[in-house]
Length: 110
Image (tube, rainbow, N blue to C red; front, side):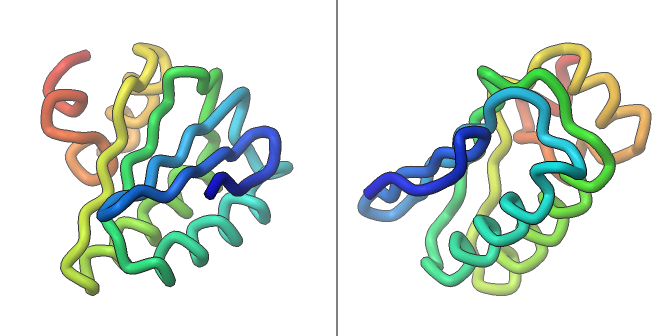
């Protein structure tokens, strides 16, 4: 099953969900990202977010990802963010959030 807005496409698999972020994820997409995050938490599976096609994340998007990570952690599930372009990775690192929202390999590489 695939769900989402044009900027947010997700597909459910046996024990994980893949969410692909496309374009700029900012305050104009925040409501859709928040609604999607709530749906993903309700599924009770690990979530992987691919940023292969992501051009930017603003503070609202990062806040929602932090909430998603927290809610999944409460359920004993994981959030992994992968394929983060260097400019976005650098912005996340400047905010002191790299270890919180990026996967281990992504957090260490700048």
